[in-house]
Each structure stands twice: as structure tokens, then as C-alpha cells.
Length: 179
Image (cartoon, rainbow, N blue to C red):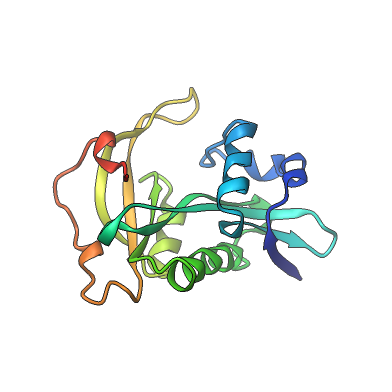
């Protein structure tokens, strides 16, 4: 049995096993703490019955007007805990808060095209490819430089689903920033 709860600062000492996945972006401690301070309700963990961490999701809200949206900064599940529905459960928390608490138009995320398993999960959850972002992921010596798939899922506020109409031409990283 697992529980989804809000992330706590002390959790940073327990999530190394989760962050070792080659597709997981890792950040410095101040980045994790800034999310905890700014969006505590959008930063959640899946915890096992023995209190070990099984996965986490870091999210935020950003943008203005019809670009107001929830964003998945990081979603990762420990290799031994995959295929249990934890990713879906963590995403449900972010989507629910984005829709009901923050009244967003959509949720978006960036994913490597080589991360086929993640893309398939996001598609199952209703996400579609919105655009490709050139050289979004830079090489770290292990993973190659790759463009990103910017995937989106429209929420109830976007009645006409304008936020998910695909853009055919790739965009540059600087074209993805929201004010």
C-alpha cells in the first residue's frame, strides 16, 4: 500500500534511489526548496507503508490569461515501483489542483522523445504533443542532446481546447517561457 502526501524538506535525504534513473533531471537543493516554498500543494511524494519514498512530482502554475496553466517540472518513480499506477496518482494530484484550485486552462510537461515509456503513459492520461522544442535537453555526458516534446492536456476551463492545438514547426527554448 502507498500514500500520496505533500513533500517535506527531509524527503530530500531519501530520494536518491528515485533520482538515479537516467531520464530524471536532478537539481540543486535550493531548486527543490524553492518549489517546496512556492508550490507546496503541487510538490508531492508517493510513500510506501514502511515510509520509504517510491516517487515524486514537482509542479507549479505559471503563465497569464489563456496561457495560465499547471506545469509538471519533474515526475519520477523508483524503478522497483513502476507499473503500479503511482505516476498516474501523482499526476492526478497536479491535474486536480490545477483545475479546481488554480482554475488553469491546461497542464503541460516536457519529456525526452527517447523516453518512450513516459510518453506512452502521458498519452494514456490524455496528453498530446503540442510542439517540439529544439535542444531543450543538453547532454550531460550520459544522455545525448535532444529536443523536447511539449505535451499538454486541456482542462475544463479550456472549453474549446485551444491550448492543445498542435504547433507543427519546432520552437526554440526561449519561445517556451511564460510570464
